[in-house]
Picture (spheres, one colour):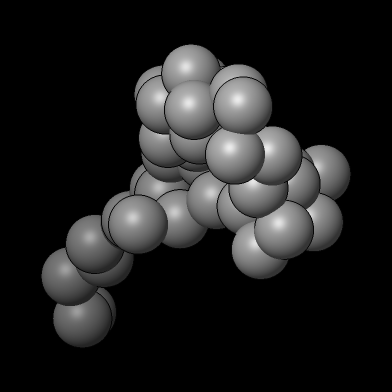
Length: 40
């Protein structure tokens, strides 16, 4: 799962009281973009 670089610290050291924060991090993720090009 791609996580935004701004959320890495919060993901690696979560606050046990704020479990909802982890769900927010998962929802606020980077959307990978794949591009397919045909060879000419």
